Image 1 (cartoon, one colour):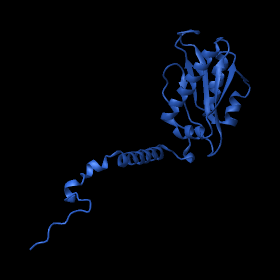
Image 2: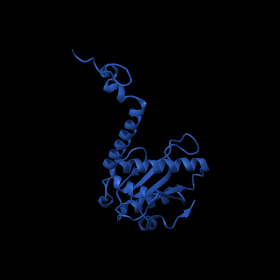
Image 3: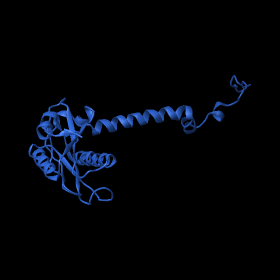
Amino acid sequence: MAPPPRRNPDGSGSRRKHEEPWLAAGIRPANFLPGLAIGFLLGLLLDLSSSWRPRFSLGPAPPASASRGSKRSGGSSAAPGEELKMVLVVRQDLKMGAGKIASQCAHAATGLYAELLASNRGLLRQWEQFGQAKIVLACKNQQDMNRIKESAEHRGIPTFVVADAGRTQVLAGSKTVLAVGPGRKADIDTVTGMLRLL
């Protein structure tokens, strides 16, 4: 005579009937959320490592094509670990209010950043590593701004000029702010060192 079938100690009968399918067990919050978090962090690390460029590969970049007013970006080489800064030069003859100046400086900084993002990421990364220093200075008029821009471009320092849309305080097409840099402090100072703080 055959022995009777064995029962599980909990008395639940056959084990196979009560096992969850592997997929159902895998998507329980206790199992799914840690896996999701680990996958997200690994993906983020892989994405960051692929977009990082080494600091030693800084070099001049070709000038970007001009659009919306007068702008140009070049390259400024700096030694690895050397601090960089950007200078925003504001025209005083336009008599812009504080809010207008702030928005025009933001246009200049983000405009130059966007151009360098496409042409010289290494320079941006080095500038970002040291806190993205920005100094706001004043110039008298358009002629002064033009001289500063030419001097910076002659030294290979990227520039960007904001041409205002003319919706508020100034006429359409007015050149309001010149962004110079990022570049080595010494190079920037040779171009803008004679200007006063705003």
